[in-house]
Image 1 (cartoon, rainbow, N blue to C red):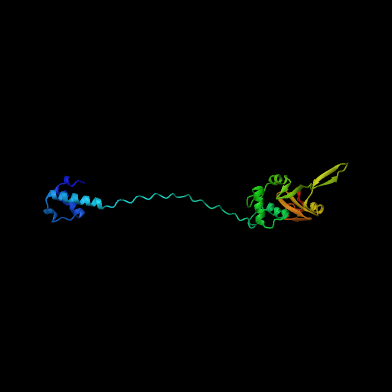
Image 2 (cartoon, rainbow, N blue to C red):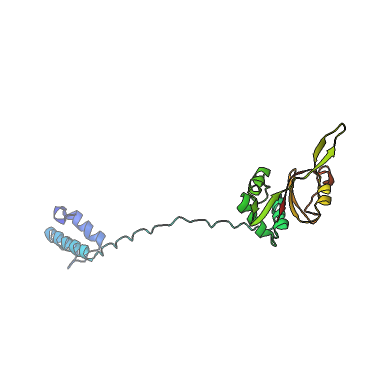
Length: 207
C-alpha cells in the first residue's frame, strides 16, 4: 500500500482502522501530512514485525515394525501332536516345548498340525535323527502258505510289542506316530478298528 496514492477519505480510514496516533485530530491534518504519517507508520510496522521462525524440518516417521508373535510351544491346545510326543519318548526329550521345537526344525511342523508320513520317512532315511542312529526294522510276519511258500503280512502293534521286548522303536501306523519302548506302547491311541489291529507301516530302532 502506497499512502501517496490514496485520497483523503482513504487516508483517514487507514488511520482509523490501524489506530495510528496523530499529533492532533486526523481531520485537522492536511492530506499530504496524513500520507506521510501513514507512510512513516508502515515503515516502523515492517521493522517491528518479527520474522517468521524457520519451519522445523519434519521429523522422519519410522514405520512401526510389529513385534514377531511368540508362539508358546506348550502341549495345551496343541492338536495332532503325536509326532512331538514320539520325539519326546524316542529321543529322551524331557520338555514338551523342546520336542515341539525339534519337530519344527526337522519337519517345519505347524502348531496344531500333523506331519506327513513322507516327510518323516525322508528324515529317518538318513539313518540319523537328533544325533542318534536310527535303523529300519522289518515289522512283518511270515506264514507258511498252503501248498508251499510263505505269506508275508504286516505286524500289528500287539505282535510287534511281543517280538521286540527290548529297545526303543519309532512306529508309524496309518495317521499316527508312536513309540514302543521295551515292549510297551507309548502314546498308543485307540484307532477306528482298535489299537490291537493297527498295522505297522514303518518302524525304526533308535540306538
